[in-house]
Length: 300
Image (cartoon, rainbow, N blue to C red):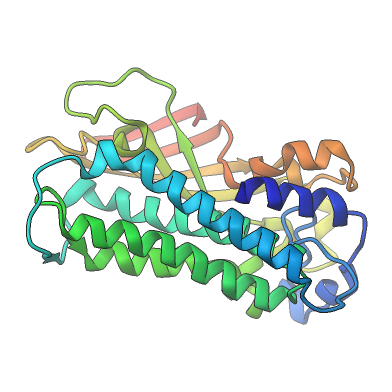
């Protein structure tokens, strides 16, 4: 329901513009507006009680659905007293799971913020409460993990949750961050021995990226010579995430194709392609790993 409210907000308000407020910048790295993925913009007239109530109802429904979805795969194991673990480095899934927490926190915050914006909040209010909503949902996950013998309340996971939940707000407050996007990709391959039997924990198939908007970083005089849609991304993954031996960290350098940066206007095509902004599409890449370097014509 939260997603439905966010979609309604985008559809209703997408025709308004706020380019001037975001086109300002200084120096050669002035951050231009990322056109489609910004929050809906409309004349601010204060919070609507019925819209806010609808949004909060959506948040509650989403939270219950989220819990029910994860209840069996994550919390059906042996219970324990509440315990805390400090798995900052060299532990569970070689930190790929930490990046998954950042990514999930960001996506939840953006979706919730879009709904709060629809209710009548200002941009910064919406991003703040979107971050708080995301963090509250992920805090619930960590607390329940704390009562599960297999996991435990992870201080590193919680730090990653905070980073992800408030990264969109940080991008709003500090313009250069708008030139960086957290993305992910997933190998559409069968599960292999040693991987988990659910998609969320199949970390061998997941890669997380920081994609840089090169065009936006260039001096204005040079921007016509670099395509809007072409960026550069650095990625991190792991091989044999849960194996006791032969677990290898993987580092990537790749081109980044982002069709949402094309001049698509504000019609249905822009809305349809919008989720691609947070996915790393197949692109040429170099992988650096302990057992050697590999080149890929297309890596996803």
